[in-house]
Image 1 (tube, rainbow, N blue to C red):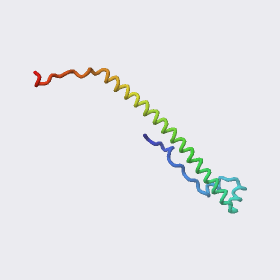
Image 2 (image 1 turned 135 degrees about the vertical axis):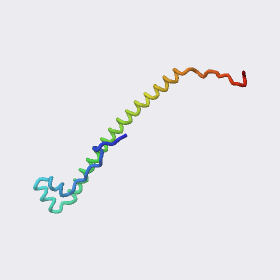
Image 3 (image 1 turned 90 degrees about the vertical axis):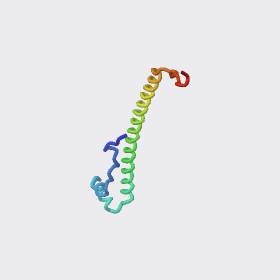
Image 4 (image 1 turned 30 degrees about the vertical axis):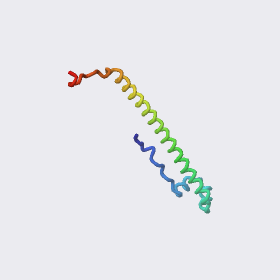
Length: 98
């Protein structure tokens, strides 16, 4: 299995980046020490990013499992076809019997 760069852990957003993304009135409220709201919203954003990354990883794992199951069935088919093509054990005379 391999990982793609999209499955890297999401980058945390800093409070200053968060403040800059807010409208002017929300920025003013945030500067007035409305920290619990900001922290809650930041945690919510981080949780959503982790949930999305987790869902993507689960989809990748499901596709990997499906691919491996397909390969296992092909291998089983090859083994069963090889075992039917082989002749049964032939009796090889021992030197002591001759």
